[in-house]
Image (cartoon, rainbow, N blue to C red; front, side, top):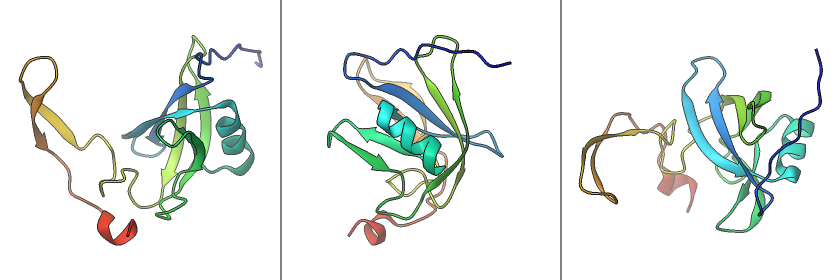
Length: 131
């Protein structure tokens, strides 16, 4: 069954996109996408995102070589979030971990800070990749 859905991009023309490992189901990262980023992702099969800090389109792994091969792009029921099912080469996180979600909260210190524990191993050295 095919249907048309309205995509609910925000005022900045962005939507969040969750990258999930297609095999393990692990959540790797969350980033934002513009309509052009989604178009590039669908056309190339490689994950593209929109950098809010740099105000530009970027291909995941463009510098590191840690690309995401996108097997499927899904959209949620409200049309306001994407899910990229990916095969990740190398680490997804720019800090050297496979996933950006490599820490867990142990204790909250009020509303803005927390004590955390690192629960994963680094898969690459970011100092060697981002010289």
